[in-house]
Amino acid sequence: MFDSRLFHFMKKEILQLLRDRRMLFVALGMPVIQLLLLGYVASMDIRHVSTAVLDEDKTYYSRQFLDRFRNNSYFDFNYYVTDQKQLAALLDKGKAKLGIRLPHKFGQKIARGDQADVLMAIDGTNASQATIIQGYVGSISYQAGADIFAHRLAQKGQQLFLQPLFDMRTRIWYNGDLESRNFFVPGIFAQLLMLISMILTTSSIVKEKTRGTMEMLSVTPLRPMEVIMGKLIPFAAVAMFDVVIVFLIATLWFQVPMRGSVLLLFLLGAVFLTAGLGTGVMISTFARNERQAGMANLLVTAPQMILSGFIFPIANMPLFIQFITYFIPLRYFLNIVRELFLKGTGITYLWVEALPLALLGVVILTVSVLNFRKKIE
Image 1 (spheres, helix red, strand yellow):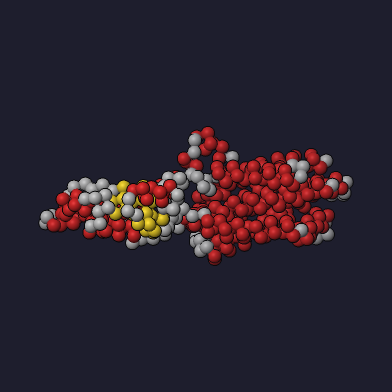
Image 2: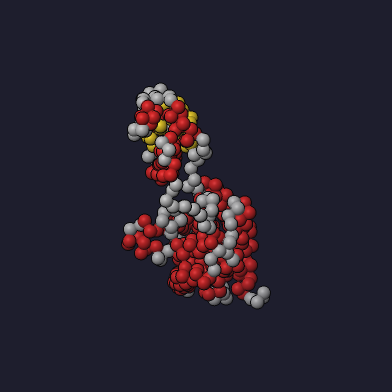
């Protein structure tokens, strides 16, 4: 085996990679940098929302209400204004994301048992952020109103009615602290595996074409299948090495829990790798130079990231778009990775995702290899 033509060709590919500093950085450095950057950036948790306050009432009740927002990590009272124009100006300039206005007679209405008006002006430029802030505001305001109502009942000697009808006990499974990082980092793990396998394979083959060495390979004793395997196997090994590095960073640095089988993760990662390698081979057969290959890689990876459920829930997409997602390998591996990391699910349940992933990988790789073989021949 170690004296075969395939082995020596694979050895040539590895040595060529080690000598090419740019490709070596792409193979080993880029996954680490991307995971570190995206691991910190990819989060839906919002803290320290810049808040402007207009308290026209300045009573005990208005101060108590504002303390509800001040005494948590969600809101920072950075601005105290004296009129509505100043409040609107801070929102217009983007200095404040939330404006709270408590009008005159706010405390008087609460003391009488009337309904008090409160203005919560939220910057809706970022719809996702505004929705989360709206949820925070609604939750805090509801709790403040419930406490005031309970206090009124207690003053009237109606403590009997304070007993809740339900003993509601909420427990969050699998991600108890609701850390969005635990949700996003495994997704980045899957995305990087696809990206690296595609880039390495595409760049290697296209580089042979631009240098004119692909024609030289066609006249060597190497059979077309040996050329293809000599290209794929080394980069599959490099991609799996990247998986190990990214896995260690995800679990040790970002403290993402790994509750499932590590062996199963790598086995299914190897299955997913066939789709990435096959896509890279397919792109390389059409791309004439590295610039075209780079644009084609971007054209393939961007829709996959959007349609795989990495950012946007697939259930919220139109039905015909949901149908298209069934042909995207990243969709299945993304579910597998998150299930393994957070739930510890075994193959008994994961085969529903693993089977279509394997079928897609085999089809993509087979079609790509056959097409590439015709190009060589």
